[in-house]
Image (cartoon, rainbow, N blue to C red):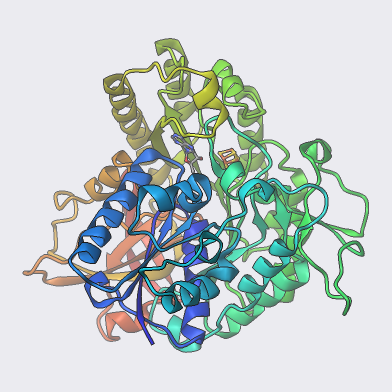
Amino acid sequence: MKTVYLETFGCQMNELDSELVRGQLETLGYRFSPDPAKAEILLYNTCSVREHAENKAYSRLGLAGVRKRDGEDLIVGVLGCMAERDGIDMLRRFPQVDLLCGPGELDKLPSLIVNVDQTDRAQRASIEDRAALAGNTSRRSAALTAATDDLESLDLSRAFDPDRTAGRARSAYVRITRGCNKFCTYCVVPYTRGAEVHRPPVDIVEECRRLAHAGVVEVTLLGQTVNHYRYTHGEATDAEGRERPQVGPGLAAFRNTVVEDVNVTTFARLLARIHDEVPELPRIRFLTSYPRDFGDDVLEVMAARPRICRYLHVPAQSGSNRILKLMNRGYTVEEYLEFVDRVLDRLPDACIAGDIIVGFPGETDEDFALTKALLRRVPFKNNYIFKYSPRPGTTAIDRFVDDVAEDVKKARNNELLAVQAEVGAETHAQWVGRTVPVLIERVTGQTSGAKATNGEFSDVDRRVQLGVGLRPTPVVLPEAPAEASLVQLSGRTPGDLIVAFDAPSGPEPSSLLGTIVEVEIQESGPLILHGRMVQHAD
Ligand code: 5AD
Ligand code: SF4
């Protein structure tokens, strides 16, 4: 059986897709290597959200092309959003690409690989045998396509292997919703991932339960807009009465977040069910929240259920109402602030993170000043700051000229990073003196006293500046210097704050990975807390 190299670009959705693809191919007997030179099948799970991510994927395809021209017998596959967006045009432009598989068709990947593998390369498999794309069916109407049900089988077929979670940070993603209905003008996601489709609650709860039994400590529920999760029972069942994924209602349905109908599982009810029905799961978190249509019902469920993490990733995108309107975000700055105030009123220790785009078409100095003011008004723990990148196929690229010069975008990006560093420092400082539970994720070495000078924050800043900081949980600590005299551990609080502390004497540090310990916070910076482990909470 051939060896596969799978590389993932972009967001958490892609990371989850890659994990499921890997599980599916491993079940079929494929082996995986972290080294592309040792693999005969190269798969790139791509992201189209910004040009930067696409360029990285193109450069990988260039290298794969060189290997093929040198005579290596490789299968090269492009998965994910670039495959979906470029479509079969990509097969023409990049002859080294053998197969394409859109994010909505990943269940078909094994058969695409077999088709390519069994076809004489000189003849080339037909396009239909090499490409699985949703194409113009990606905006599904009221009826669910068979493809969506097949895709559900990919999530359902997830492997629950305790060996794979042992010793590592035990954190897993669980999808609750695919796709997006909002059509922000800059964004390709509604085109590449299609309309919102919600998974049946029973499948989600079962997946969480099985992950917990396999040793997972933290589940992150994923959706482009988790608070638009809505499932009406008794509508879509298969022949055996099993509930099927369901196309979500239009945006108007979320104007009133109070849902009386007990036959409907809202996001709040889903969270409550997972918390109450999977008591063995220590941490439940979710990504990404949309600042509108986020009802008090969710906040009440969070306030009453301690294992639901008080962490919200809720992108503002801009602090100017004029720009928010051009972005078609559907809320004003005042509404965003009203939401944040509501969160902090109900959950005073909640941590808030966001995303901001600088240099959107037409953004003036005044608009940008409003964005800086927004950052100063909200106790953000961090913000992912992106320079606007015009994306083919979006409304913004058709309707607006990308008229903010690159050096202006860059300057605004840097200025905002500096503002965020101040805001982050203030937010983190509030935690000094408190004792917090930390899920340990990394063992790092560090010379004692080197904390402040050893690039403590620069790694994160660089990732954010490069626009690769999509993960709300940046891995920040620098690798151990050779002369390290102290072993450090790092992990995250329920609010997603990163905490570093000296490993206790006694247990082998790596044996603590994946456990939750209590840490008393002693120092803070813009992105990291430092503390002292006080006891083993397990
Ligand atoms: N240009 C820059 N940033 C973008 N994002 C989405 N599309 C674009 C684009 N065309 C950012 C948004 C979103 C995050 C995932 O990526 O801030 O929240
Ligand atoms: Fe893109 Fe807006 Fe949907 Fe987020 S909410 S995926 S930015 S269209």
